[in-house]
Image 1: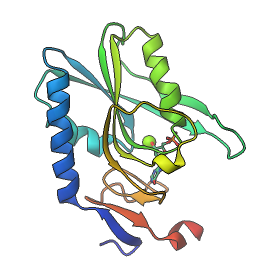
Image 2: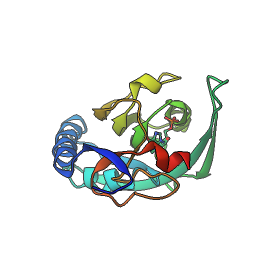
Image 3: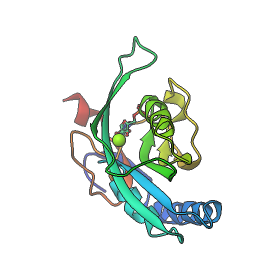
Length: 179
Ligand code: IMP
Ligand code: MG
């Protein structure tokens, strides 16, 4: 285990098993369709590539990057798109792929935005969800794991850009982000 971690929350094996299950469900639900997988950079990249390889139907890849600015005093934040999708969304079956739903602010803005562009359908797959932290409602169609209110890193998730390459997900020691 990395020395900056307090504990491992999800092992490589647990993640692998769950991602396989999610892929099987998605394959069933999208039978006969082509999925436009929209990954949210950068945190979702690891989950995205693993999930994509478990889906047994035609898939297209695209990515977007956004940042959300919300303060504790506000119930809804402002979400800025830093990099938009390259693809035309109209008529497509979109699967948004995210690493973690925390306050829900990012996806609460993003989902209607893609729907407004005329997508045939928009669904959301997230590896992790912290329900205790939710500030706004988000419909999650595929959820890997519900986790407690702790700051986690690894398997794509970062703190200050670091730890994304850890193959498991762990809880970061408080002293790491307090210093
Ligand atoms: P929200 O749902 O709009 O609050 O934002 C979710 C985003 O916040 C995620 O895509 C992550 O980039 C980031 N995030 C939230 N919780 C964590 C965490 O525990 N570790 C790493 N990043 C997190
Ligand atoms: Mg993110």
